[in-house]
Image (cartoon, rainbow, N blue to C red; front, side, top):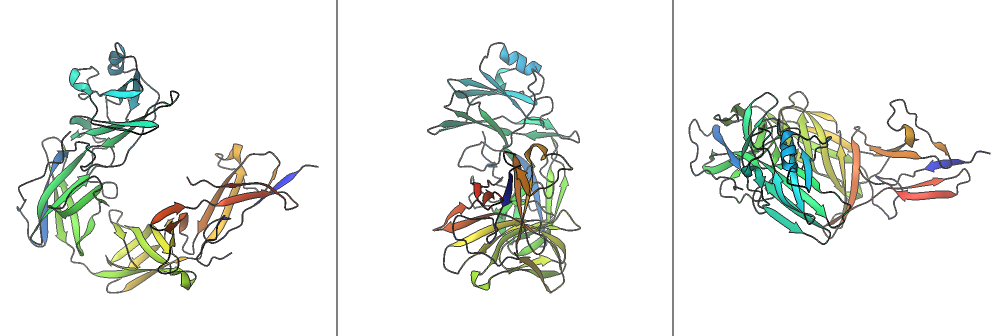
Amino acid sequence: MKKLLIISIIPLCFGLVLLISVPCLKAQEQQPVQTSTTVNTAGTSPDKIVFDMKYCSLSGKKDELRYNSYWGFGGREQETPFIKELKKDKKELTVVYNRYFKDAEWSAVEIKNKKPVAFYFDLNADGKFSENEKILPSNTEETSGSTTTEFVTPDFTIKTEDNQKVPFRALMQIRTYNNNSSTPNCMWSPSCVLEGTSTIDGQSTKLILFTNGFTGSFSDFGRCSYYLDKSEKNIGRYTPTQTLSSIINYNGQFYNLKLNGSHEEGKTIQAVMEKYTGTTGNLRAQLTGNTDLAPKLTGATIIGSKDKNVYFRLSGDQTELPTGTYQLSSGYLNYGKENEDYWQLNFTDGPEFAIETNKTGTVELGKPVLSISAVDETKRYQSDVKEQKVYSKGQRIYLTRKISGMADEIYGRFSKIENKKQTYIKPSIRIIDPDGKQIVSAEMEYG
């Protein structure tokens, strides 16, 4: 007789079977940034603020402004003329790829004694090596098991997808491991911004635009980021940024933001902020669950439903917004008894809602429902794969779990915060036979 296994995944609170008791909502079963000393006043008025944005290089120093985000690009190694020339007299080379650097996609790291000593980048994209294209380390940090080394290129010119030529600078971070069998981990990061200074409410104010990866664009709403604050504030490594939006909120005042001009060589972008004069309403997020757990929305991202250039980050239970229609894209909620350690859960794909003039719109979330999908591991990438609940012994299966709320929001990771320390809780799963005997149990990984 063919022996069968039965998958049993029991929901508890927001997750699956947990190994600890969890309070839950009620469920239904080289250069630093150059600081401008001249404040732009041309065309500026209390209702219209103008920033003339200038290209600025970042040095990559750890205590200065940096992106703190890294990209890796896979690709089959190609021996371009630049790489061939390097390999003539440099043996220990690791080749690195970045598809955005047209005609200079391939660069190389020189390794000696398991440590990076030089980075070679084709700055002028001519396929030939010159001494100024040998870049030495700017930062090195050693741990017990690895070494992280960073290189910052000089300024160079890249071509954007629409064939504009723009100045740019990049940082290469390389992590090498003491284990001889491990290959270096090479990651790219942008290392340049656009910066301008103007006056808002009598205060000298700085605006910084951050590029969207390596596209060379600093002005894509919803993709690029910005920083806006008083000029005298320290701009360090962990300067908070926001997603670039056509409507922004600064010190409680909404502004329409327009970006005119181009970042091409010899040209500038002018950022114009005009006070928003339209009507506003308010948003309140209501979480349905056990009232004694005091669920609270602590942060959220919303985007315009019709105008995709509008992005806001919200915090608190009630927030003023310009009149319009939006989608609650993602957010975090806390739950637990007041004045005690608490739990946190994130969600995505929240509902659409409308903000009407001088009214408060309510978005209702909560009542999470757990569902499980189990498919044959060998067929997981097939579009017509069928879910199953019973499998033969020894058969490999692929499991996913989904927790959706009453507004079709999707809940993700949940964690417990104790003494200000956050611990992610992994759902547990067990597989039993037809007689109810446990065959195997394990924790489900996030990711």
